[in-house]
Image 1 (cartoon, rainbow, N blue to C red):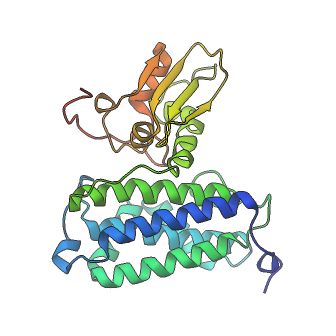
Image 2: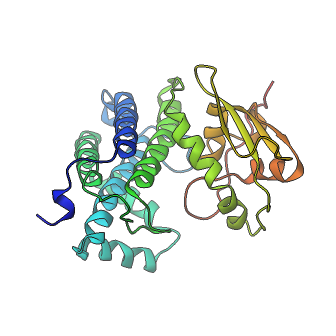
Length: 279
């Protein structure tokens, strides 16, 4: 056992995020646990992805997050192999891995392996010392940041699965983690679209599921965004078109941001088509 594995428990922040990640994983698991093999092959709103591919992507990312944590601590073989695949096919390898797993495994096998990957990631994240950064495809991340990123992806892909099976997902306070990522990645969204990020901070006020207001940025900011946390989270994960949200922007830069917002790594996404607008 190395020094990092001897660490006794995660920080309170990591504990909180991991608890919410576990709850989000359980919520998504409940959507797929009773599916037939045919049901696993139901297409989602994500172009070309069925439910099996979606879960395959989640488990693949969980497993490789574990490889990244282990690699950070010196056992780099598994992580280096992933990096070499990324170098060989930087824009397509993630999708290719998800498709391969979905083709190789049945729905039942995918679910069992995803359950194992979630438990393994939870355990490994608890070994990361405070201040230690974990290697990743973008900038290195803390344990809290990696757990939050996994929560964001689990929630976003869970929306796709819920849509595929015809279930409406009720918003929870776990959205605050996703909204926070959305705010923090404002400049990334501009840069990812070849645009210069605004110099000034925005004020973002979002209404949570229990009508409490979550706020970021200075109160006297000239550019503002208001609306529901649910719609903001859907927008920054590109699960809804800007026209189908209740979000209101004040200021040209804020309005532009809502048109390109993206809180996940990778090339600028195309978003989702308009479903009728916000009535």
